[in-house]
Length: 244
Image: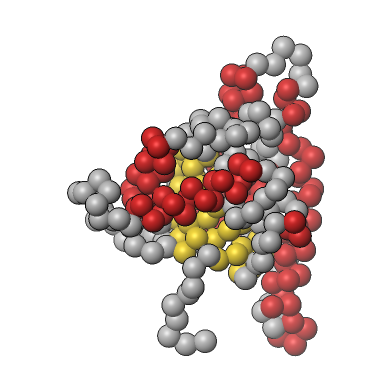
C-alpha cells in the first residue's frame, strides 16, 4: 500500500497534454504526485500537417514521430507514466473495449484528480468526445458491479483544460494554477512538439495571460501574488469545504 497521491490526464492527441496541462503535470510531480498521462491517439491524421508535407510520409511514420515527441515531452515534465492507446483520430474510435480500457486505467491509478478537454469544441470533435467518454468512464469506474473485485473509484475532481479558442467553447475557468516554478520544464516539453511548432509561442502567451489573471484573482494590486506563468482550468464537480 502506498500513500503517494496520483493524478490522471487523458489527452485526445499526443500533444494536448503538453499545451494544456504541462505545467500542472510538472508541478504536481514536484509536489510528490505520480502523474499518469493517457494519449488516446497520436494526432496522426488531424494534427500532424507539418509531417504530412514531407515527401514520402506514411501513417506509420507519422505515428512514430509523434510518439517520440510525446515521450520526450513526458520526460521533460517528469511524467510518472505515459500510455498510448492508438485509437486513431479524426475521429477517435471509442469502442466498448476502448472504454473498458480507460476504466481499467482510472481504477488502477485511483487519481486524486483528473484532467481532460472542454465539454464543447466545434473545431475538434475528438476533444469534446474525449471528455464525454472520460466522464462516462469515471462513472463506470465508480460502479461496484463493473468488474467486481477491482477497487472502485472514489470521486476525483475532473478539471477541463483550456481549449484553443476559449470564446467559442463555452469554457469558463474557475481555477488558476501558478506554474512559474516549472515553466522551464513546460517550455522544454512544448519544444519537443516539432510537428506543431506554430503553437510554441501561442501557448507561451496563453500562460503569460493566465498569470495576469492569477495575480488579479489572488488579491489584485493590493495583495496579489506575483505570477509569471499560469494555467487555467474549469472544474466539473462541486468542491466540498469546511471553510471559505
